[in-house]
Length: 475
Image 1 (tube, rainbow, N blue to C red):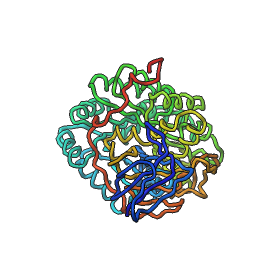
Image 2 (image 1 turned 180 degrees about the horizontal axis):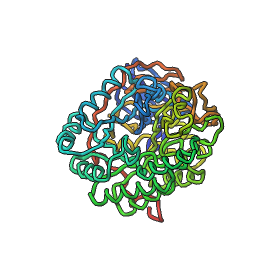
Image 3 (image 1 turned 45 degrees about the vertical axis):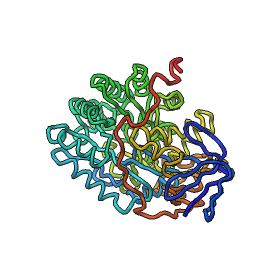
Image 4 (image 1 turned 90 degrees about the vertical axis):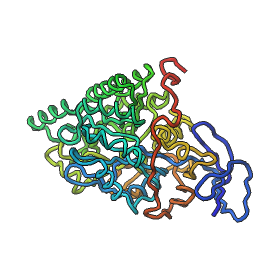
């Protein structure tokens, strides 16, 4: 059935205006004033913003880690995402050394099949780059539409790849039109610091942060940027937490390198003191890289404003406090890394960013949706409100004041990382390809309705170049 969203304020990365949006067969067919259509369903968006659906470029659903599996799978995780205003997620497909890449991709297809309520895609982890992987990689990119490759520079003896693998991955990505993503921390030094802390009897959650200092994130970020320059490739640094890493990205971009950065809501509003909470409560805030000293938040907000950081991912990786985080009682290194953030990403960026004057409405849309669509080969199908684009739309009430809490969230986890946090604004209704997933704050979607998205190669959509940033006096 045709729908017309009326009376709302339409916001894209470039424009803000009052208008109507007509939808038919899952596609936006018309944008204008006083649109009329016989037998169309009228959706009243009075007093609300009409945003393009959020794109979360960084999730871990149904992922094994540290002897357990994340509490949210592709059904509960995407339901929570939809409640929060996200209509597309890109999850990480983990590979194993010595096994075909396709086997790992098939496993993630099995995890997500008939579960996702919104559209989704995959990034592909690269742990080694031998002749077998080099031969298979072009097929995966072409046949699966997986055009982003993840390399871990941390988690020694588990996920970490060596610098040679990163270098060769950057070379392959340059040739095949893929975007290389890095978890940038110096895993070798971290491994030493963790062993030293445990040997000295330092086992509490706070030592997770103290053994992963920001200098090691900055060092790894700079190293990855130099290798990107050497290969003339493209790099995306995930979950940037600190000034040391943000400055390395800004430095690389001032040189004109194709280096991009993502941060997460937790790093914008929480700080290292959360890990000091008594009675092991600090374990709730153990993720990697760790939370930093509070002053880093100002650097991250400035980096989002000036364009040296371009996106915000949730890094959703939820583990229950009871029974899962408690695996690390007496040994912080055994606490499963990750937190529940997928549902609150959209609202925290709006409330802390737009409402507090840190970013504009249009910059909000750019960060929460548009730039991720461009970087990851989904634009203009996703990431904007335009004729011909998918009707992924969020009707957002900016006047609502509410408190984030585990009592009211929809994630399948027993705590909320932002418990008690006061926010402004709330998604009221969310449409995925023209169909309501959330309507008047109620879930009306269906497991399996989400489609797997094959993505275009890197560079198919223009991204604002580094030298056009409002940074260092350059406009």
